[in-house]
Image (tube, rainbow, N blue to C red; front, side):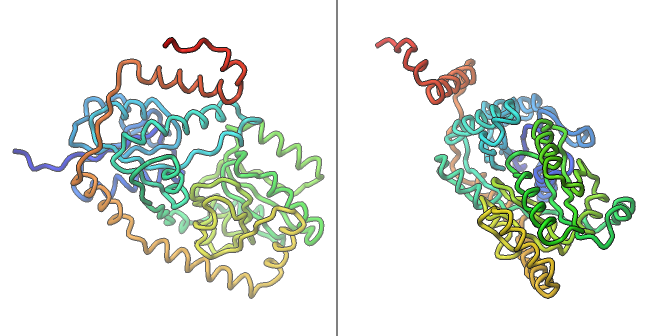
Length: 401
């Protein structure tokens, strides 16, 4: 009888380059392979720079075995997810949160629809998974509210080594002067509430410090309508010192962190928010809106605010930026928070979960008929009609008795 270990594979919709989920996926693979597990990454799509590290999700069928464990990273529904669902392998869900679709309704209808359907699809996995892991306590609580019976936290422990490399000298030369630099790092997407960052900066710039600029470093090419609204807003406010950097390289990101005087975040929905920890690590005072996972991520460090009234936030910004001793005290607490985060033994936590799942009685395997997902989609469409067009819903023919 074979005594070899079962394989522990990962499956996800897409493997992105340089993002938090991508870093976590590659880190998990490193830990699993070091522990002697066969472990591949199955995806529907991947960044061209990472394709050689992945396998097509359709190959899951050949790699499948009832003794294997699939770590299914769920952030939105996908063909990869649905393929994994139907296989006899054990499954653990790793949940990265789904942004509420209402944030995208006015600026990206396709994404709004995907988020709505992704959250609906998540319900199908409640009885499919041996365990559901959130990458933050906020996400674990979300899973619990959705009805998953066994939940836990697999903490995000960001790899910050890439921030120790040399900075891009062109960026440094452009912005490293005697002006005050306010920085936000993250995708230019509606839940990040970049418009609120701009409003708060406008109040600070006009009331306290005209020699200040705002730098927003993050990709905006996918959300053109939202980006157009932001640039129109900047124009209407008459702001000449708001810079959208777009997607940046690691060297450019390091330069922006090193020249920043304050990191300002007004996001309303975060599952974790790695840039907050990056700013902590680069010793930038952080001022952030206390929403969703942000307070837990900051772990008692930085400065939180609970109202977005621009004048109030601007006054807090000035209070920090005009007091070097306060800045030093904030940075000191932030570095302690980074130390606490990095002290967590991610490798041991992951392997403990894996060993516990593999040694426990398994959850019942999925029984998937040939038209399972067609029925699921039809039920989803019916639910959309019931919620948003109730008169049409009640006009539908009744099910025969």
